[in-house]
Length: 248
Ligand code: SF4
Ligand code: FES
Image (tube, rainbow, N blue to C red; front, side, top):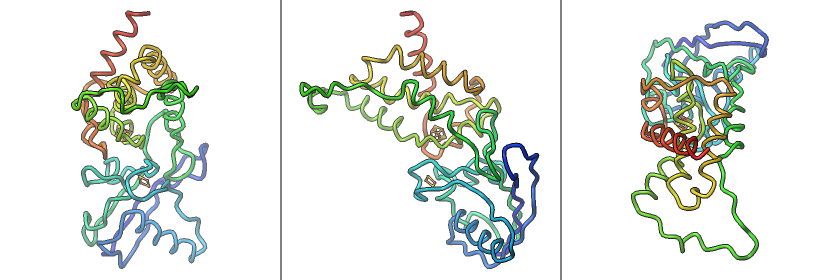
């Protein structure tokens, strides 16, 4: 396939940035999107140009590092996949592909297609954990009964990889799907109930401080989430938050 790529280039956080056109040829439909960018970068290096900076790590849909807004969609046109799992067979010979960073006030661009998603880390640090007594008197986790339905829902929430596609897809740049998933994975389990009040209050406070917008129930986040995280998690977080607020 021969393609035209329109890629966001930005030297650093203070640079204004602009879209730049690139031609790439002989792209295999079996390549992943990131492999296609690797080929482009080799081409740029050979020509003495600066390669395009983009985030990646595992390249198998686990780490949440890859991002990219591709033709106006977070993680591109396929469903239930991250950018690293997106294949070039989703495009046609002669296509023009627009490639931009995830855009949100709370995700500032560092360089080209790389954004700072440290805000998610700070939300996690505010309460996305449980404190466990490791004094030697700990109870085996398997000894605490958990309803199968609750275990399944907690597991589904825990599959959120923190990629930020929900934020990038939301017209309000809301992080409610991400925070909803992180609150839910603990709220559904007995181990998570001990610190439930502080957790939801602290995580929501941090989310607001980071500059994420509010949820207006558009649902774009659920559509674009590569892990199929359900809006149900936002509703659960809202219930948890109300209960915690009433407790004071
Ligand atoms: S909820 Fe989905 S889109 Fe948002 S960070 Fe988690 S995995 Fe990514
Ligand atoms: S590089 Fe790890 S999820 Fe894409």
